[in-house]
Length: 268
Image 1 (cartoon, one colour):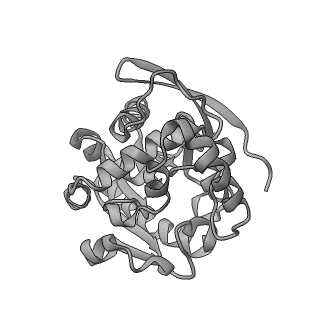
Image 2: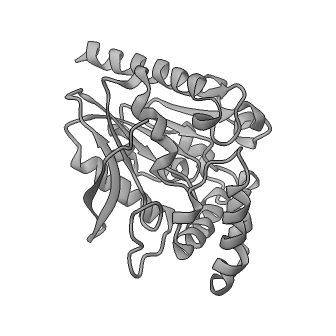
């Protein structure tokens, strides 16, 4: 696959201005798929989407959250996931005239569910891929959050980078993750996953919403707790189904999103 040209997307949120590294494709479609990555990851998680025939007519936007991928770490940024949700809301505000579908992986799914009701109600659909909605599902975040910030890079991040580089089952972009961004995001993820409210946020979402997971992770507490009609399993996959089984993942995603798009086009 040819390299995807990178752009910079300016966005304002909560009185601050950010410049996010991004991949963008405009096709003229009314439908825009906005992509949000997980902890220690980047827009690279969705690279294959640019070549998938199921989405050749879709406009796409994938961003690196602050401190991840190629987006710089802002000074004095808390990395609370609600603050990161405000940034996603800023992206949505810029595209208020579009029919936006949001696809968010892992921590990104938790961020998406922290959007306020007004923002969620504007989404054409929401697909969260193995979001961490209860604390018991948090593995990497739990490890990271236990390490003091002063020791984090040497004690956790450097060994983690070596570990994931040698593991073909995972698709982190840990080499481009800022230590402060990683740890503070992990601490906030543990807070929200342990808050007892994230499952309810999903079931109360005012837009069509689906929880997607890899079959190897059928043990996740979220799978047992959520309405079956909103849960989609991807065979032969684990935490990164878009890499583990891209044909099944993007095929299922196409069915979900294209059916929703056709419904809305007919209603319009």
